[in-house]
Image (cartoon, rainbow, N blue to C red; front, side, top):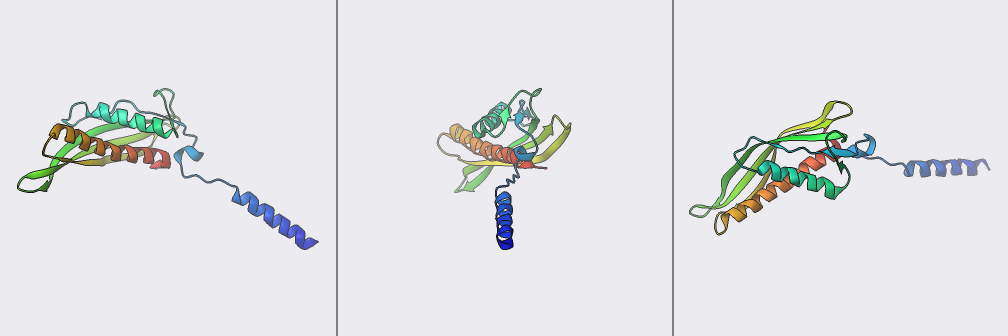
Length: 165
């Protein structure tokens, strides 16, 4: 009889331990449920890039749904950022540049409005895209810029949700 009760206790212990939940997400145990994303600053020479990247960040958080996007005065964390540089460089050559790489550098901080401190800060996050120098160059350049935004947005979302701290 004693053997059965030990077995039952062990089974119960395994069941309880097996049902526990562990999360490395910033939203899991920290209570962070919302984010504010004010308009990024722009120190680059690229006009309107800050508005486009801000919109991309907001869209990414809304689509993901893990954190609600709210106004600054209501959000648990605020993402503040500055685009510090947008750089075009030749990427491949035939006799002249065939492709260019466009790179966007971003400084970003995630500020906890409840604790009144920075949760994480990254300098010169880098996103890049490759575009063709032939044909419709402006359209291709915009597509390259969109690729750079995708990388930056993924990095910022990951840092915010997993915790860059």
